[in-house]
Image 1 (cartoon, rainbow, N blue to C red):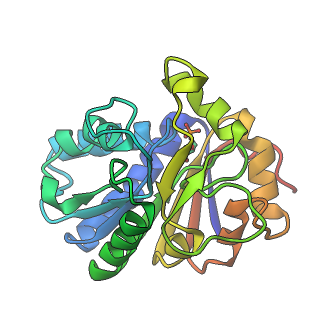
Image 2 (cartoon, rainbow, N blue to C red; image 1 turned 90 degrees about the horizontal axis):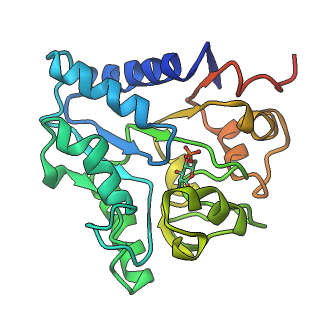
Length: 243
Ligand code: GLP
């Protein structure tokens, strides 16, 4: 596990965008695993800036997103489909047919999760998976649990996640209670993992997840067992790690 410490959010975003663009340059038709949440917005902005300068080309890139709220339509501005189009897909030369987000409108959860898992396999797996980190240690929407969920599945969101994400909705009641997410097994199959995290509010969970025991109660802790993980974190997020 390699940890890059940056002075702030801007530098974290630039470093993460550097790593992702290096992947795209090395393998133009790579599969990028993408994430949502507030953390990656700066990374996407930086990629768009470099695309506009002609430094990075998305024409052959394929993408798979980690997760999607169950029940939200694509035109709902809180859906992760909408988020990805707003922050990245509509701003670069990626082919829309090469982008994939779980379909939150498919009510048959088993069917959609199976389709998504197979799709990732048929693309040859994920070359680099970008991850944020939930306050409770979740990655994608893999919430603390007594076991590590393997494949793409439907989850019940915890109260803490609903609470954390309600800032994007009119009220907590509007936050969907379920989501489709890649499983821990799906994420662990990615060839490389890039986790980004910033801010003092995440310092405790960073310390627990990457310096504590590996446990499904802290889903991100499993990343300690992946052979190629890069964490890009700002000073504040790393302020509580052991010496
Ligand atoms: C969300 C997403 C995660 C994200 C996390 C942290 O619920 N499902 O993929 O990493 O919460 O979000 P933020 O970056 O806004 O703190």
